[in-house]
Figure 1 (cartoon, rainbow, N blue to C red):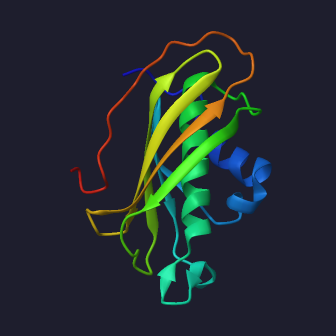
Figure 2 (cartoon, rainbow, N blue to C red):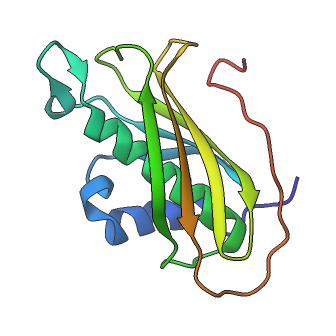
Figure 3 (cartoon, rainbow, N blue to C red):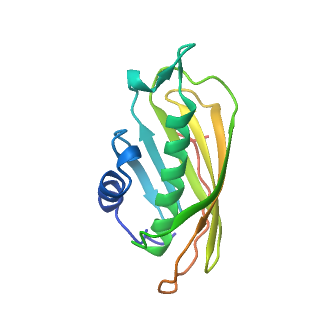
Length: 156
């Protein structure tokens, strides 16, 4: 597997500074590879909605920024890559704990990247949500594509 085109530290800083709404969520990168990323959204009482569950917008923001990070892990710091579409399916009620996002790029073209994100409540091997999305990529230097598999935090 090839090394990511950008470091985890650089991505975290870019997310905090360039995407401040989601950057203020306290998201951290736990693992980064070329075309894959595992991120964690720490639990915060402000992410809880009526019914005692983590709010959908917080999980959607995590999924979107995970896909952004996975795209940049392949093409480098092409900051103007933007979401063109994203769909999320909420599968189960997430617990009031941190949420982990496991993301991988499935298809990387010259102008579009397509990927998927699985979201997990910390400590639970069953996903709470599944997202797919497409990113538009502005002109940039050519890259070599690496499409990788991934596993949840329990190695499954």
